[in-house]
Length: 120
Image (cartoon, rainbow, N blue to C red; front, side, top):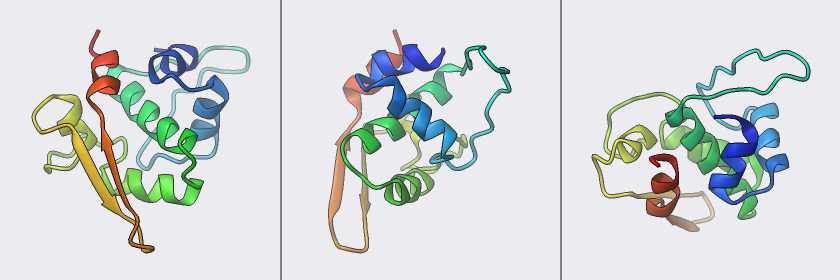
């Protein structure tokens, strides 16, 4: 899936997706080298992960917080602990992830709709 398709499914501006990729907001993400003028292609799980990060950024989280949240949720790794994005993507857990920032602001994201957009 390319950047435009990820943005469409996540319902965010493609610039947000490119920002997430170009500023390395997702830990453990190895990007394919498409070359200048070539679309970058990602597998379904990485596309979902990128969409989550772009949605967090689009919701107004500072880039440092997006990176922190994505690291806590497993980033682009396919770890199997109960709060990882991989577990949510594979529909093995309740699709609700929580992360508390230092300011004691709790972020709750229901990812059902987003996940379903990537399973079509």
